[in-house]
Length: 356
Image (cartoon, rainbow, N blue to C red; front, side, top):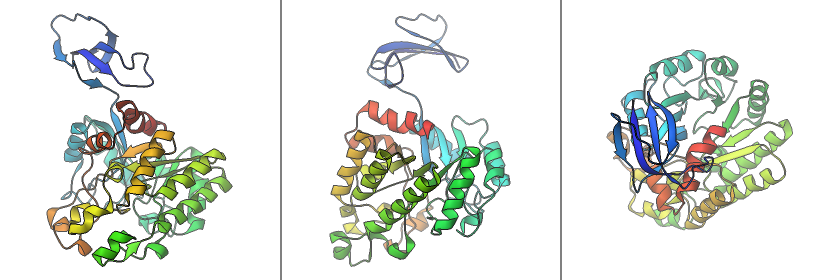
């Protein structure tokens, strides 16, 4: 691909051209020149005046049905949606059928994704079959291309298993992702515990379910002196716990789903299953705290938590509807709606995710 992009406003805090309007020349898919008034005769020209040019986003929490759940979405449609949303790389959650719990699944997904506009990084499971009992074949998966491990939206309830996973991953430089939820506290509730759950007449999930698990895993990370990443934190107290842990030197990072920066549990008053997500939508106080956490550096990244479903699994009664909403094409608009600057969005959606 040969292309000359004219008069683009560079948005990249790491670039010497940040906040400058420049021309960018691309030859054979590689940026070869950045400057002003570039003349490249015979090259296709794109007038980017009034538009931002930034590094492509990397999504740290994306659910695509392939393997086994291709009726929800496959690699081809998922990466097309990602490209439309500004993403050039996806970290795929392992909650497929079968789960990504061995090198065979990792190798399949990497081979399947070759030749796409968007890079695909399969995440391996922490536990065998995502059952939370025994460690999965983490090193074999790492050797095949899985650089991080998580059981997706199934929190690892066994503290001993999580400790072993952290220690094992440290040995070969991988990162463990923790989805923080204590099942004994959450007890299969569907919405946030509070005023709205009372109005709905539904049992709520206390914020304690998330915060207790974050506290546990922070202690484990501190004890083992290993890295841990918390995905889709959603409460004010969760952000405070991570902030304090960072202050004392715990190797912790975290992300937030874009929809948790805009939506609150008040949208559930109509029992619209589109808004049934996990973790649940919280209060405006939590939303404000999450935005503040992004601005002060507590929260490292914004993710899409893209989770597509067939309509028959969402357009049903709230209680039985599946968790999740689309996110790849809405993450950027939601981040902008939350009032975040373009520079901060690039930091949290493009630069920091690549460091994590």
